[in-house]
Image (cartoon, rainbow, N blue to C red; front, side, top):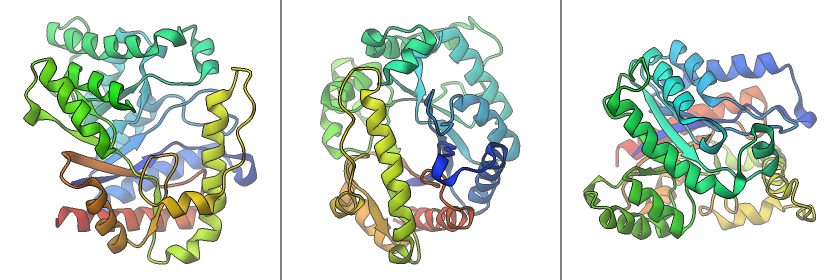
Length: 322
């Protein structure tokens, strides 16, 4: 099981700084993660967030590719319904070329109405559009319909789907499932088998929400405030533009008490050694290739983020040891 770091490049008002510094520091952290032995870096995507959430993950992936030589570079996720498939095929190929074959393309359907309105996309068809994107990407690259071609003969595609029905969809497509939920493994396998794909090809990856530290309790006072901001911003985004009431404030202590679990409803605060043990117990024997953890939660202080990257990489070494 490999371990990576995850970035969204947020710049929230309570901790705002120069945006150029956030982008530059994130590139520095990617280089540090590579030096410390991380296997991958992953980038998220959203639009119209007041905190400047990263809107174009493949653009930033190209910058990471130019600054690193070994890290796998993934999108978790890229919002497939907002773009034409040819655009995704070309941009992904360019990143794969710059990185010499290190791109992992995670696709997702999205959930925020303002983003679909910004791009003139149909939110009601988002799952069908995401499925179609994965299928058409395979055809475009196989048939050479756009140039240049990616370096990788079969560039990895991951479907960022949640829930049993969606896990089955990923299986039907024959692609990786970008989720760590053990409950989704059987629906995913069923989809693979139903479509005639080899079940032994099942592969899963995904994010763990947590903070890994040699002094986790000492970090919690700061981390809890950043976690509260991050989770509340996601929950507000889910109802934005839909005329629904604003969600109630979250209690970081309650989220922490749940430990490992659903990405938005649990939190792992632990030392690298504790985290390795709990992650192994939680995942069991499902076929997980990679886990990744946000290096910065809503722009945590740079010195804390740097220590967090080092701790995540130590966790990775422990998990690699089995």
